[in-house]
Image 1: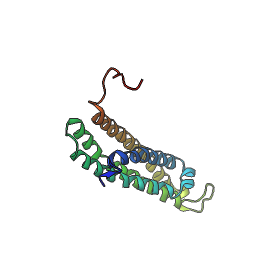
Image 2: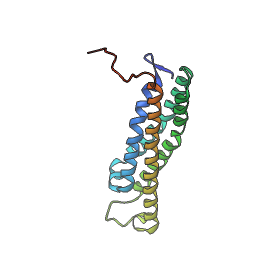
Image 3: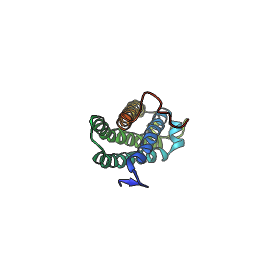
Image 4: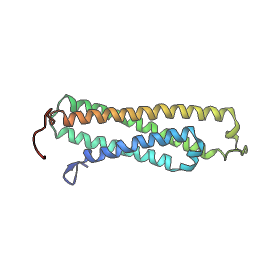
Length: 170
């Protein structure tokens, strides 16, 4: 998809990415460190991360189309290069969200020691590792989205603004 209602699709799709990546990252971290939140979110956590994962290549492909239809300069190329690096972060969010959902789903309610994973040292190690990885991947994903967005804004606006008002509009 290249155009939506006459506008480059990338300009529209990017809004999904800048909302969904931080939202997925936040939901993942909260769920990874607080199992009660993970149980409450349930299947929403991996579904949200999956939707996020799907929006990234759609946005990237639309961006590649747009890149071929604008004047190429260093800022546009830099933005495109940074954008290509987001997919592994989104995949990491999805994998970890699925892992957190799966491990939380397999553990029983607090206080019920009937589940083997609840009270074992191995279960605790998995939960701590998942939490640490979740924080690292979530942070990386959000920082990457910021860097990509900043470079995109610079590419789009670098020669469109003036230092002084033009006198239009009041």
